[in-house]
Structure formats: C-alpha cells, structure tokens
Amino acid sequence: MGYGGKGKGKWRWQPPRIEPSLKIWIGNLPASATWKELQTLGNTAGTTKWVEVFKGKGAGTGMIAYTTVEEVAAAITALNGQEIDGQKIEADVWVKAEKPAEDEPAAEKAAES
Image (cartoon, rainbow, N blue to C red; front, top):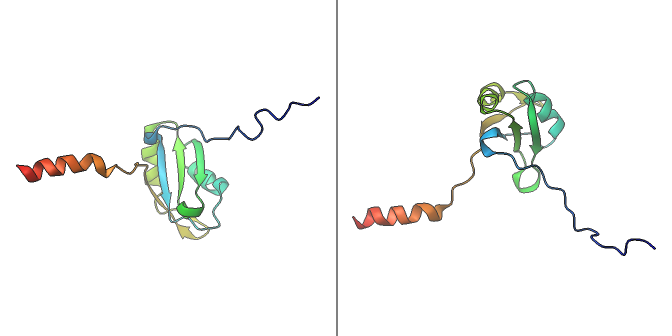
C-alpha cells in the first residue's frame, strides 16, 4: 500500500541553464517589481526566454534571457532607462564575477620581472 516515501522531497526544481551571453542584467528594480512586469517590458525589445526578479541578497536586480545575442544587444539599448513603477531601470550585459585567484599569479610574475 502506498509508495513507502521513496524519493519524497529529493526532487528540486531548477531554472534552465542559459548561456551567459544570452542574458542581460537588470538593476535598480523597485521592490514591488514582478517577473511578469519585467517580462512584459523585456518583450518590447525581443522575445524573452526566461525572466527572473531576484529577492533577498540580490533584491533590486533581475535577469532577462533572450534567444540570440542580437536580441541581447538590442534589449540592453532599448531597456536602459525604461521605467517600472516609476523607477528607471538599468540594463547591462550579464558578466560572471571573475575569480581573483586567476589574476594573482599574473600580478606576481609582473612584480618579479
């Protein structure tokens, strides 16, 4: 009778893996902003593939993903300075923070020469 609880709670939903070059960073979002509002705005610049409004530590920022790099470039230009709830947003490329450990050996070599 029943399933014996196997696998209960082990599955966790995860957002799709999207190439960083197809994402744009959105900043200065009002706290009241929803992903749906951001998607509506994002769709004015191209077809959005994924939209997220970050909460907690990343509050006030979000991400929009598109299907082509051309859409990304057009969206950054089109969305920069647009408003959500009367607040101007910022749009920029999605760049992962570089690891400082990779830069340190190069800096040490330069200091030795």
